[in-house]
Length: 165
Image (cartoon, rainbow, N blue to C red; front, side, top):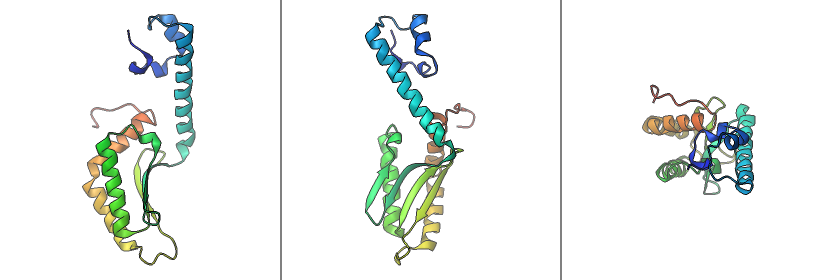
């Protein structure tokens, strides 16, 4: 039979309903507690995301000052080639322009580029920053739209619209 991890709609159902419906054969009290803990953890994670609904969520970022790249662990389920593309894009941007680049999701699920620089950073190219971001938005339009859709479906719980895709 199926397990909770393989059923996509299990998240929405109460564990008690799962047990009473007999959907999972071979459930005993030991693994039922595990299912309940798993459901509670998923619900808590979803609530934490929803609490932050009025805040932006950082996808990734890079800093020319620390020479580091950051990927939000909540997005570790993204395919490896997308994570690598994001890393290359952010690091090349900071190498070229300087400062700090962050990709953030708005509460509505739109992906925005945010930049900042230290006050005394005379190497930061403010004009080049705007031009480079516009260039990235044009070149990586499909990637950005796919990431927005991923965020809206996985984190905001919106339905996937096949007509929009």
